Each structure stands twice: as structure tokens, then as C-alpha cells.
Image (cartoon, rainbow, N blue to C red; front, side):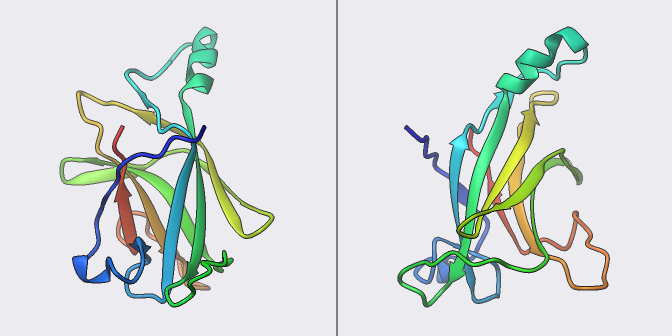
Amino acid sequence: MKLFLALFLTFSIAHASECEIPLNETEFCINIEWQEGPHLNQSAPRRPHMKHAMEQGKSILLVTFYLKDDSSKAPLEIDGVKIYPWMTMGHHGHISKHNVELLEGNVYKVSEMYFQEMMGSSNWAIRFGVAQQGEEYNYASDFLTSVKIIF
């Protein structure tokens, strides 16, 4: 059975009636489903013999995008889409290792995510953005929507 978790969304309440998670001011909506996790790991394994513990704590997320006015919510592929885990630490943050692959049916699988609690902080989110062709994407500031992860 897949685990569904409550999420706090960082979007305007005005958009709530249009779609559950809007991709900011675009015509797209986002649907997310945790296939595994999310798992918050209390400490990062730093020794090779702890690799199994790290594998156990990885999370997998399935993401689909659809048009706001499409009641069927038919999944779409979005050129240049960025989906990534982000940890906020005070006035700065960082991206974390992950893998994104487009599966059959235009479902994005975000895997190899390892969420670690650092000094009592667990301010993790999944960020969504779209890279413009020919421009460098800034993971810290170019995201369009962010979904806070509740562990």
C-alpha cells in the first residue's frame, strides 16, 4: 500500500481551486505520490559497511504534470523540467543527490533521494522548475513551486 502524507504547499490559496499543486503561474498542475518514503534519516552513514542502512533510507517519488483545465489529468512531458530535493538551512540551502527519469506514460520517477536530519533540522522540500533552453538553471532561485516534506 502506498503511503500518502499531508503536505504543506507553498502556493497562493487562490490557486487551490484550479489544481492541487500549481506550477506557479504556468498552465500546469503537479500530482505527486510517494512510492517509497519519505524517509528522514537521523544520521548520514559515513562508513562503507553502513551502505545497507543508506539504501534502506532512500525515498522514491512519482510526479505527473497536467493542464489546469484538463479534468482527465492526462500526464504531460515538460521540456526542461527540474524536480529536485532541497534542504533549507537558515538563510541558505542546498540541493541533494537524486535521479530523475521519465517513465512510460509521462510519469517522472524521482529516486536516489536520501533525506538527512542535520543538527535537529529537517527542512526538506521538493522543488519544481523549468530550465529555459540555452540558459543555466539556478537551483537556489529559479524554482517555480516548492512542496514541503512532512516526515
